[in-house]
Amino acid sequence: MSVAFTREEDLEAAAAHVPDRPISPHANLVTPEGLAELDAALATARAAYAAAQAAGDLQADRTALAKAARDLRYYTARRASAQVTQPDRSSGAAVFGSKVTFDREDGRRQTFRIVGEDEADARRGSVSYVSPLARAILGRRAGEVATVAGGEIEIVAVE
Image (cartoon, rainbow, N blue to C red; front, side, top):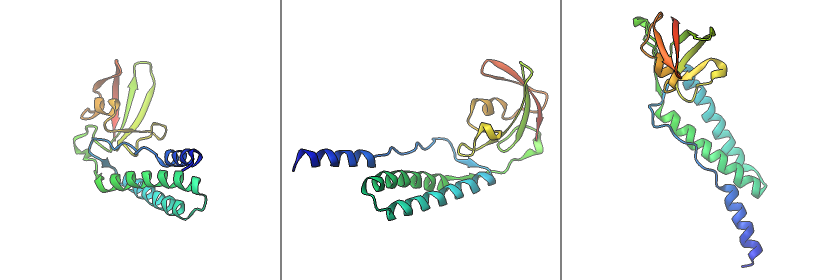
């Protein structure tokens, strides 16, 4: 076999190698909305995988197929392990699914909802239940103080 063919095969193999998305070691808690997001992501991954299988360009096929297969494995595993969790707000304490408003030492008031890892998005006002912020406020009630990143926050409201 020619060296040229070997190098081409090496490039194709490298293009097809896409590392798996890491799966969190934490329980896969999700809100009902998070479960719907997982279902949508899984459907998108299935469609991308089918489209990659049907495409014609060999180099693009391998890369697209590898990425689609990776995403399909990830979302299949996350959907299978999802544990829908409804917040029990009867205690008044911050729990999974709660929306918590707090004041920072610098005067900023912020509100975040505590959600699962896959649905967390600070820009949309949600943080993962395993984040340092969420761990600091879980179990606390309005009027209590928590320490986050070396500073104190005062919880104003828990919904």
